[in-house]
Image (cartoon, rainbow, N blue to C red):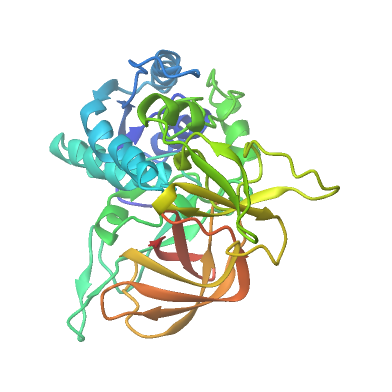
Length: 375
C-alpha cells in the first residue's frame, strides 16, 4: 500500500482530472482540487474560452467527491511564461510548443510551487503517462552515485493507452518536477476512465475533450496570432525555380510541412503546395509540391538545443528512439552530444516537416528520457 500523501489535483473541469482525483481519494490519499485560472480571454480573441464553465464543472466534481476546491489565479505567470514564449517564438519565425511549456512552467512550475507552499507533497494531473519509482532512488528525489552525477529516483513511461499517451508533452520536465508529479491515469485507457467517471457519479463523464491551446480554450492558433502579432506581408516563392506565386500576411501564420491555408492554387492535377521553408531577409514563404523531392521538407539530421533530461543526461553517442511530434510513432535515431550543450540527431529514415521551435522527445523503448528543441 503506497504511503498516504497530501496531493493537490489540477482540476481542468474535464473527465480526466476528475477521475484522477477519484482514484487518489479511493487510494486513501488526502487530496484537494484546484483550478488553474490562466486565461479569461480579456482581449476577445475569436473562439470559445469556456473557463467559467470549466470552473463550474471542476467544482461540481470536487463536490461529488467530497473534497476541497479552490481557484488559483496564475494569469500573470501564464502570460509571462507561456503566452510571451508563444508570441515571441512566432514573431521570430519559429513554431513553439505551448503545451510542453505549460507543463514545465505552469502545471509543474508555479502551480507545483504554490502547492508546496500550501503544504502539499505532490501535484496530480490527468495526463496519460506513467511515473515509476526506481529501485536505486529514494522517494521524493534523487541520490548521488559514484560518478558524481545524480541518479534519477523516478522514470517516466508512456501511458498504456497509445491513442491517448501524453508523455511527449512532458518531455521538458526535470527529475525534481517528476518527483512531485502524480499521474493516476497512466495505466488506464480512455474508455476505462469514462467508465470510472460514470461509476463515481461524475457529471462530466461524457464531456468532450478540449482541443485548444493549453488552458486558452477552443481558440484557433491563427486567430490567436492575428490578435497579438502584427501582419508582416511577404512573397510566396517557389523553392525550386524562385517564381513568386503570391503574397502572404505573415510568416508566423505558417509552419514547415503545412499544406492547408497557404492560399495559392497548384493548378496541377493531384499536386498540392507545401511549406518547405521561411526566408527572413525578404520575409519569403518557400513552397514546393508535396513529395519526397520537395527541397527542405525531409531531414535526415537535425540539431536540437535546450536539452532537458528526467533521466541521467546522455554524454556520449547513443542509439535511441525519438518522437518528432505528438501522435507520431517513435523512430530510430542516433543521439550525438555536442561540446556546446546541444546535440545532433541522425534519423535512420528521413523525417518530414521538422519545424524550428518544436520539441523532439527522446525515448528508450517506452521510457521517456527527456527532450530538446529543434534549431
